[in-house]
Image 1 (cartoon, rainbow, N blue to C red):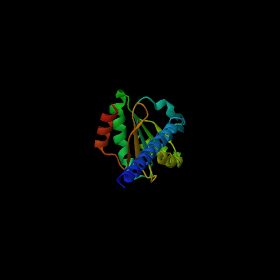
Image 2 (image 1 turned 180 degrees about the vertical axis):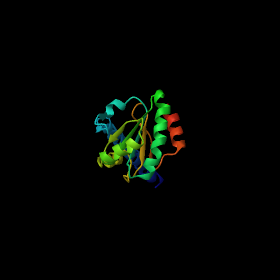
Image 3 (image 1 turned 90 degrees about the vertical axis):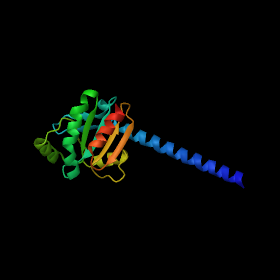
Image 4 (image 1 turned 45 degrees about the horizontal axis):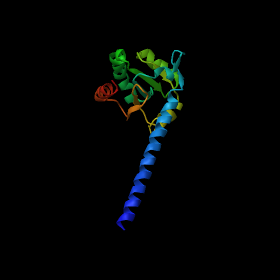
Amino acid sequence: MNRRLLIVGAAAAAAGTGFALWQTRSRFDEAGALWEMQFEQPDGSMLVTASLRDRPLLLNFWATWCAPCVKEMPMLDRFYRDHRARGWQVVGLAVDQAAPVREFLTRLPMSFPIGLAGMGGVALSRTLGNRDGALPFTIVFDRSGRVLDRKLGAIEPEDLVRWAERAS
């Protein structure tokens, strides 16, 4: 009887490990599609995500109608200005219409690139691990494009410190 339990337990563990590896591979493959995308920027130029590879990246999904998103934008801008010399990139993908984003950036300019993702940004954020499609959502990639962390909700200064240390 004990031998049968050991065999069943080993089979269950192997199945669980296989599922976990499949999920990890799927998430990596889905994040891989990010590097093939491009987004119009508020000034009409294109943000080509392939150009963001090989350096740490903080990718923030936000909208002008999202109060926590708007509140954290100056902190993200400060992080970008303080860390870009060390290779850090910050990109904001606006899950919003172009006109409100342009108006927002006129009032509060950002140093980092903003892409206009529209409602397609919600689907992209879900592919990258945002199960609820809620905002703000931030995902941090290391230099090799691997996901270091994800955060649903407002960023705290401690998050930025931790991410900067992990990706350096």
